[in-house]
Length: 357
Image (cartoon, helix red, strand yellow):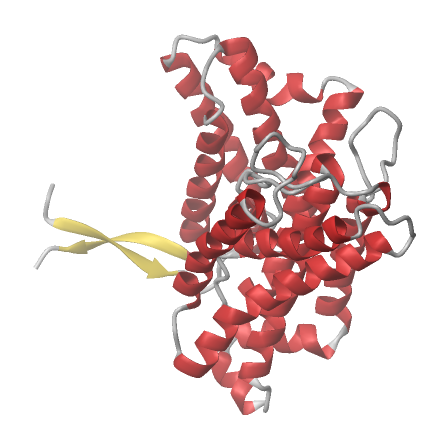
């Protein structure tokens, strides 16, 4: 029985239906595995899943919180799709988010006592510029020195976080903040307008929808989108067609960084209203899961962002009603990624048995 070894063989014609079903299968298997984990912990699986997935969105406030958390996830994931479709693995969206919040938030701090309609647009532009400039660093290093963008973009995350930490405990610390590591609050002109009274859904969701539509338009209707897709499918064909590889690398990282930077600015000018150490619960990293769960398609990313955002809310309710750590949300996110990659592998490869030599 041990005379055969399993090996992977590329499928000549992968099923398009199965490829489309990969996210659904991944989410279903995550729920099944999650129910087993809850059962092993001594909880009723039905009660646990209801607490995790249904209870958080059982009222208007819960739905609004779902949209608040899905907004940055969707915007960052759409930006990352520009890199991923070009086979560029930008893992540093968390750092780009942070620098967007720093630059845009710095403008808000400087004009904290200024009233003017132009303050918020200026902050949004600052957020986009901050994220784009931070995204250009791994692009530059890849083009000039052929460095691995996974490593450089990831290491830049921690540099960005340390810059933020330095600012909120140093030169930007609120002089009336009782020595807490935070800045003064932005003025009313520097805050994202709320869309509904009593809820935290803000104008950032409109910006995200605009970004999603712009992404769809670029990939569907423009030469830039065509070049990015061709380069991702076949770099050799792209070079043969005369497409500039270096230019596309810069463009992909700039767009991804700008979207992440705007998402970061939306976080600090929307729900938070100031800068402090923990402005993001790892949205930049979680958005990677959102991008692939949504199959790098703008519409798919919308639904994926809602599903992953629900894991944040579900973890909070599980901690409150079941007295288990909120980190269970990261367990569900990890399961989604695990099953997503596994299902993707089996769609494109098949397992065959090779006789042991």
